[in-house]
Image 1 (cartoon, rainbow, N blue to C red):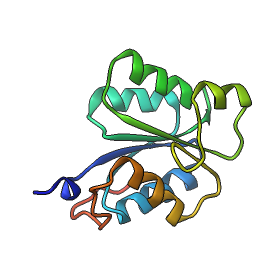
Image 2: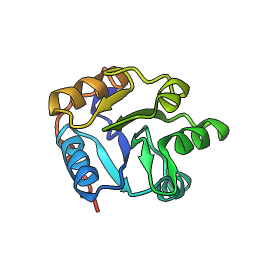
Image 3: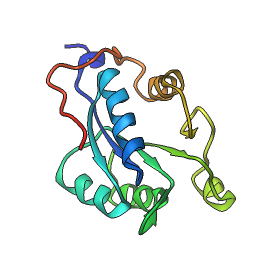
Length: 138
């Protein structure tokens, strides 16, 4: 099996249910397995329960920020890629996370093409075809 055919798992974190379910649906369409979380605490709980290849998180979340998730991943030496999305980003967070549009950050609203381009930077060998038996977002 080629690397591009692996069922890569992505955790989508956003407090807006419509955003997280839509992004998860789009990622499943692009061949990724997805899980969703509504907060930093819920994301960290899921990260401790199962492996992820990528976390795609909103920056401004209730009870913490995407930066909290990033710090957890770094402190625990987890080999998980991270990218961020947000409608607006405080400049101090933007600088601390070294956010670069199209490289590790998408400004909401974004298009399917922008999402695919971002994920292609992290997974260049991925086939970007729907994976069979992908779980639905909740």
